[in-house]
Length: 459
Image (tube, rainbow, N blue to C red; front, side):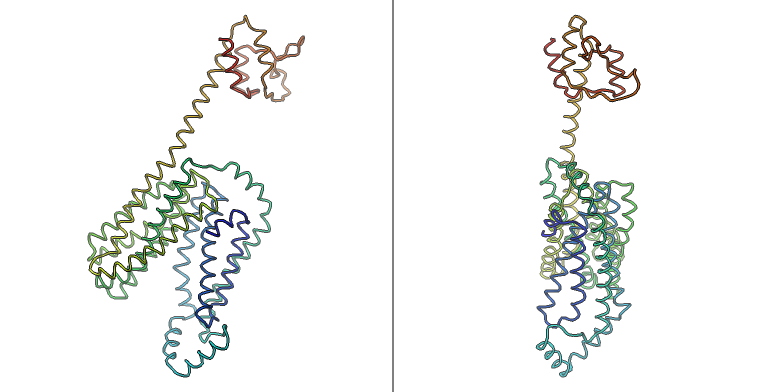
């Protein structure tokens, strides 16, 4: 929420650079923390910076490309999925954190180690960690984030002249008639979608081991299949977004989520169905979030506050729904509560999106009808004016002289407006010349209402 407000008054590149710089400081200091309170503070820094980054990344894509930025939006969210999938694996493979953590856990039962750790805790808030591999893992990721923040600061110094462009784009901003209603519905849509996504990804391991009876290695592979399919399809969605509309992608994702979650509920005891449906469910959930943002941008301009609003809805769903489902699954261990959550969310989002589409398209239809009727009245008035009688030629000349015309300067004498050399006033052209002038666009009437008033007086 704070990020959405800040993006309305601070340069986007500067705010993203500062946010990533704070993340870098948190990553560098986390391995040195010796108290739980200090570690909580560092984790809070991560939460604040990631919240600003999540809101600001979406706003920046929309600000640069507008409703044409669907592929870029898919690429942004693909980077989230790819980083979440690869970062823990790279940390374990490169620095051996798993083995070192196990050795450190075993040695923690030594009374001498306990005394040393308590003395270090009482002496200082920061200290060099015993596990240097853990330190290098955090330092490497922090250095990567620091490099990205330097690039963002460079863009800030280079793009200061784009304030004028932002002012022009703000003047051309679109606003749907049901702007606030659409934001509220998208808030609810993302609440259930992200909640179901995180719930299934978090509990599929425990569900497979307790309810289906899989081994832990198989359940871990099932979890990897879900997030792997999720990341892979977000990458493929970059190419699909180049020729598919965001609304079409949302409908396809909803159909895939509904079908896969239904099969999971019907065949909850089948390991084969669990493997296949899990992969399909992860693939179907991949493109929904970025497609939803790109779809809404087609009908109403999203600002920092608007983006922060539905991102908060997604964050609340990520926090609340897994917590509630975890409690219910503990109370009813024989029921596949996790699968019911996925099916219920798919049904709800499948019904909610057509309602959102109807609200988004209604104002556009009314605006088109209004513009069409105005054009018809203007054309009708000009056609009636061309059929004037020759009796009131002098009166018509005075009326035409009072109207404002935009005359395009040209060197061609044949395109000059007709003037009476004796009086120096603009004369009424013949119907043939009038039609030629109007079709070629050499002059135009500024006020159609004056034409209507002139015709009324003639009648």
